[in-house]
Length: 232
Image (cartoon, rainbow, N blue to C red):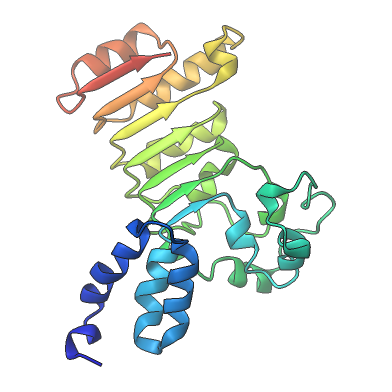
């Protein structure tokens, strides 16, 4: 093996091209590279887990849940069967299996809701320490907000927004799409909560959100970093 391949940064550059090779399945190629030898394992796994859609890939690392998620060779997103219904929460031991690759993830998009499975994990546990981009319901906020999160896409508004004050000091791109607010079905409390949380975001570059109160508009108008604002 060439000595240059012993440098992790070099391998990452080479493996990154796997994702843009036409007529290939990047995940399968990266998984094969990870199994090739010890030197290839870590950089290949880093790229394999860098962007994850849904909690199922992580939950699939739990031995008990793997056959439920990937039953009969069918992946969860190709099945109408609610695999998580009636399933017991993770145990302390299974949590370690769930978190096996969590430190590799940079982009996370969660559309499904299985919060009962994660009840054993303490709030504010920072289980994704290197996460940079996040799209989810606020039901997961306390678990998934790392201090250096740069981009966040929220699908609802509730008390979980309070986490922004203490955690998201580096937040630059925030998109809040809450249908109940956008359609005029929101309560005064929800609008007040949303305005108050955004008021504490001081590094925003882009913001997309429902209507806010006057004090928050005044705050946003004085932000030197804000370049793009969209009201839905």
